[in-house]
Image 1 (cartoon, rainbow, N blue to C red):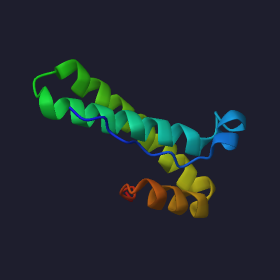
Image 2: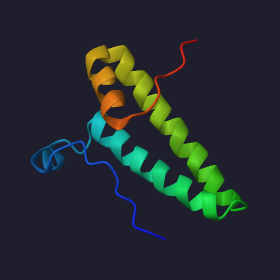
Image 3: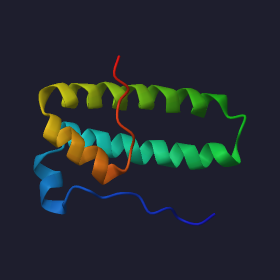
Length: 90
């Protein structure tokens, strides 16, 4: 299995000062989601990893919903950089 290259949207100097920011957390969750997705493609019956993936997806969805309410510009910028879909509007 080849080593996956994951996204590094936030620069190195910003990583130290903004570890608690919504963008930093969403990038971390996105990296975990991509790792788990590639793992589950090989191990289809790993149900505990499936559950972990669903929990991380929910956390990322809640953070993105918060960011879209607070700052629409930062939200649009982040989802375009990470190449993820927008939230469904209810």
